[in-house]
Length: 280
Picture 1: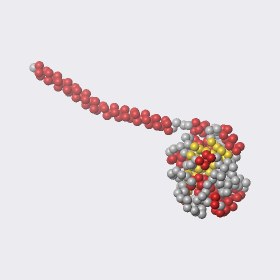
Picture 2: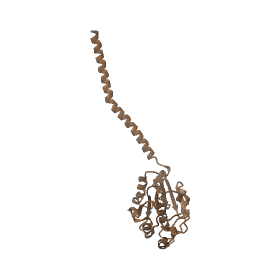
Picture 3: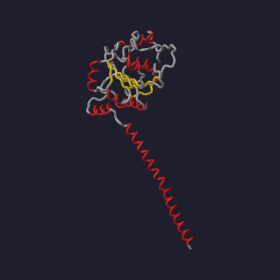
Picture 4: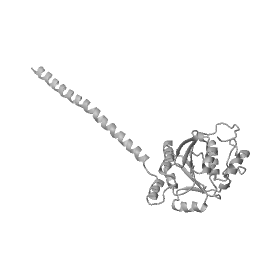
């Protein structure tokens, strides 16, 4: 009799233990899932927080454009071309912009952790803009060209060895009138991922025109040492000089997108130094 009671007690104890063991197995996956989900959500929130954490220049841009009646020079569809390229690169980029204006804070805010540098023909305008937006980086640039000479420069550059596409250089290249030879050292030393040409003025005879900007952008892009292409954006291609110079130096074969008055080129680096008569 005592043995039967002892056996019954063991059986009941084992049954209770088995029930608890099975309940643990049933609940464990849910608990593990909840814990895993919590960890994943925490990490996701951290990444999202870091990604969307605005920089000072982005916040200033929002305030600036929210209270400004003047709109950027380019249309929304044109602006989106450059924005999409910056976003696709997925990293801080080197962005060189010819021109300084009401849209400069916008360009800089698109590349908040990268280097965005503006080149402007009017020193007084540089001071005016930087007074309101001291976070922008800009330099005044002296141009040696006038729009009235655009045709003559285009027809004569081939006979000047210093302008040759296989030997072209910019720094101290006084022999080639299309070369921007007196830019700040930072411009020459930096490998630019994007170059925006929306200046200098090019709508009256005495204006510098964009001939030298287009030529110099082509030289910088072709001289790229790193991998990948240089994205060059040229605005106001509805005008004769911009269009002709783009086809001469940036090349139709490199044109990847056209929206409104903006052309987007992807220019590969020059891989050899064979003498060629033209850029395209």
